[in-house]
Length: 419
Figure 1 (cartoon, rainbow, N blue to C red):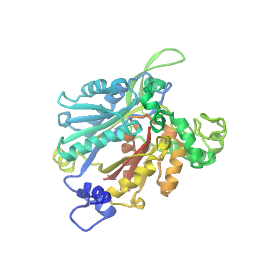
Figure 2: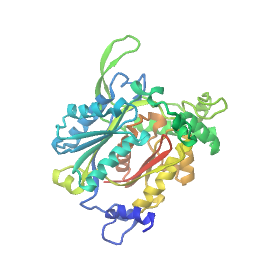
Figure 3: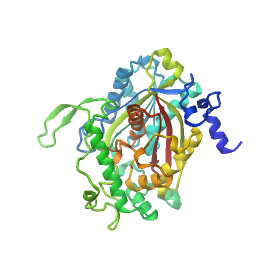
């Protein structure tokens, strides 16, 4: 059996027993479908100065867990396992994430794990839970992601390499800073500053329009938190219900005036790269038959996912490598996808991937992306699920893909169907 045939056999349950193929087969409903019955996120706020600057990552997680229980109406006793993606916390966050689940109202019978696949940690958490359900290990689970970049982002997040790792050229490349990597990739692949700034401006403009129209409201769970006013030192209780990094009036012309951040003659700067942010997101999953038995409202289904490795110095090409494999596994073409949520780690890598894949601009991040409202590292992969399914439903569309590049040279992608 060829590798392509093996990939297709892994998702054969999504094609039913009939002769339908492609999108028609993907939208068929089967009792064993892995479905999503709730997908929520917190607002994403500016690292170091935003509304969540004084809130611990585990508190954000507890907040979004509570919101999922409330909105879905799930009895917490049915949730058997919770996977949480996060990149920066010491010890992976395993201890405080278990504590957050208990605080949120899950009983001691709900297991919790932390995992780290860099920028795709949140997606990997969701996929791990989906696969556990598919294999029969559990019936109901939550895939989540969280990051407080305010408290944990910085040089200390990367361990010093041993002489063994430093002596291998490709290995040593794994710790090159992301901004430097993206600058090198932009030069290597001939991605102009003008194209990056135009893409970034579009992200801001789409996000501003979406926020004003209330298009994020359904996916955001408002959180009440303590916040200290940096000017007065006064502690206040505030309700955070909107992304605070979205800026009006951003144009390609205004972005062109910003000084490059990583090289004197470079093209990467603070305006065309993802924002450092805080936030959390969670996705509730189970089989369709389980959802129907528990009276859970189905909002979408998980189809399949892919994960690939690429050169560490070209980590930004990850979505270009991962998306075609996910589409092949799902048995659909790129044209059958209605919306692509591709993480905007840097405009340079997103522009290149979209162009190389030949994807229409109108299908990419229709409500903006990480350039406009932030990329809390471990949160993004689960956040994209709520953003995607909400927008597919609103626009009466069906099939979506979430994807991102991943630090150290990887890419990940997943295929989803809205209901």
